[in-house]
Length: 111
Length: 114
Image 1 (tube, rainbow over the protein chains, first blue to last red):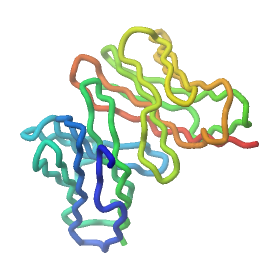
Image 2 (tube, each protein chain N blue to C red):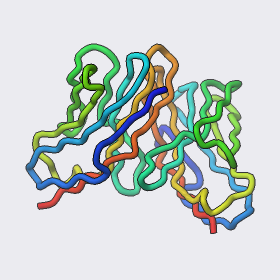
Image 3 (cartoon, rainbow over the protein chains, first blue to last red):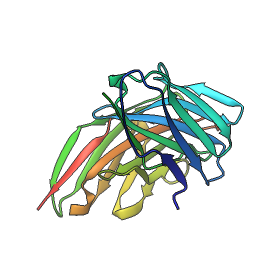
Image 4 (tube, chains in turn cyan, brown):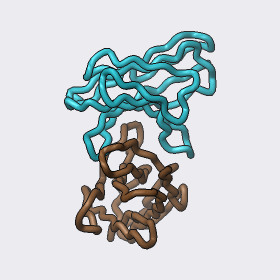
């Protein structure tokens, strides 16, 4: 089984719908992240959490929210999806050097 | 604030040729530096990282990178490209000292042709 698991792997939805992407990890890391990948832009940080009680905005948090339900679980929500949120989303955990361990990604299409 | 610049969004080499992917960073404190690879339809996996110590770092699949503080660079090399090296490569930087978020470059797509 993967150390970092994302669900769903693929999702197509319509503008205005609420979407939740879920992430769970078995690495035992306190630090978890949500990134968004768009062609030519690399990975951009949406939100990150250094422990269960610590949630921080990244560089592109507008339109997104997160919930850290437990050390192992970190979910990303789009309250009202819009087409420019169509992207590949990655959850990751990290050790103390910052090395990231990625899930396999969730491809979201907003029509 | 730290940042990463990858020179060349696309690089094409012949099988057996040298691979050189360029990465320059800016950081106000000693950085930790990383190269990740992403194969088609997959997540990212670590190729190699520099934290402290030896500036020439060897990674998986025959790749290596050298940290050059004076040039603020961390270029990725492989002496002989293989078809299986075709992928997208990302350079990333984080701050040392325990506070760290990775900041990624825009990525370089490597094509290997026969």
